[in-house]
Image (tube, rainbow, N blue to C red; front, side, top):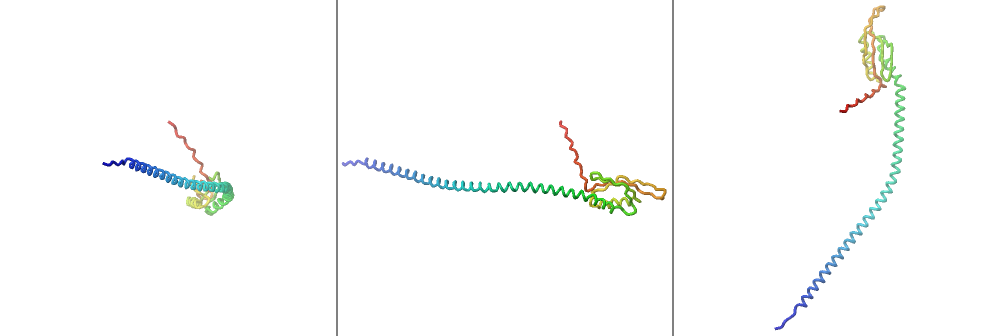
Length: 196
């Protein structure tokens, strides 16, 4: 019988399989290195583009910073001008207000039925004292005052009947309290809460 030794053939096949696996492994490593190199280069380009964009944005922001400073200066100037205009308006109002108030008072007085004997104004509170022919005349005067532009409110303080025996006439002496355009409510002091 003839014996054939197949051992060297198997060893050669085994070496061939090992060589093939090493080639596939080496080829896989090379492909992976190429893919990683491509990704690295791509990320490098993206990073460079972002850095360039960032620097251009910083330059643009620097130009806006100058504009922002100018805008802040302009806002301050506008606030100053508005404050000055408010002061001017207030001065004009205070200058012409009393004249207009007196004109409205003279127009509100019923002719030949009511006479004012005293007029006092402090901090926008106007006190009027006078004499009227009857209660209806006082009511008409109060209604006329309430429609006046520079008078905010009218309150009757007192109304007393007075007899004039020389003229055989009864008249009404009255006192009115009015709030004018110049009246400003004083802030009420806040009461402190007691701590327990």
